[in-house]
Image 1 (cartoon, rainbow, N blue to C red):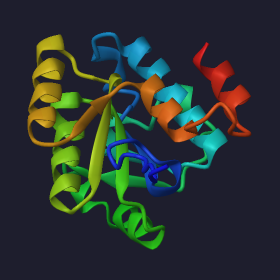
Image 2 (tube, helix red, strand yellow):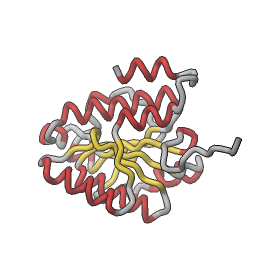
Image 3 (cartoon, one colour):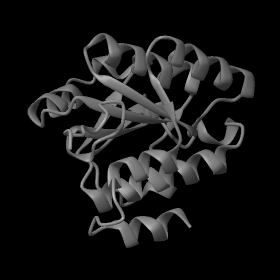
Image 4 (cartoon, rainbow, N blue to C red):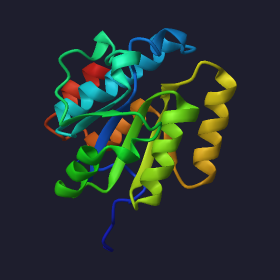
Length: 187
């Protein structure tokens, strides 16, 4: 029987991190479908915690835009990085963490899809990372901005997925010791 390899296009919990981009107090209320975006991002955070996937958080100018919304209070994050640039490119602690942990894949969720999420995705891609974005866990003030951003990212090699697909890729098998916990999260 020939050897079968797992596709490098699937998320692997041992080689990836979750980056929660700018889901902040003053930005969040204006996001179309915001509660659904937050719920899907929360699923990703909770699953990442169960499966040992590092969670990274960015906050765009928190002095003016507030902190990450309360839904994520108590989240165990490996890095919380403040920024003024729309992209996370200036977040040295974030990149240092990725390098130290030898993480090559970053899954993105957050707001706004067409600004901070997209610019971060493109800069991560330019820096040599495999980048995935959970379409149901990103939002913008206008649906058209979100849709164009997702299409544009996908056209340039960023993998567009969903929160549930990502969670089951991280879990990989019903034999995984965490499968029951993951199953309960997605119900």
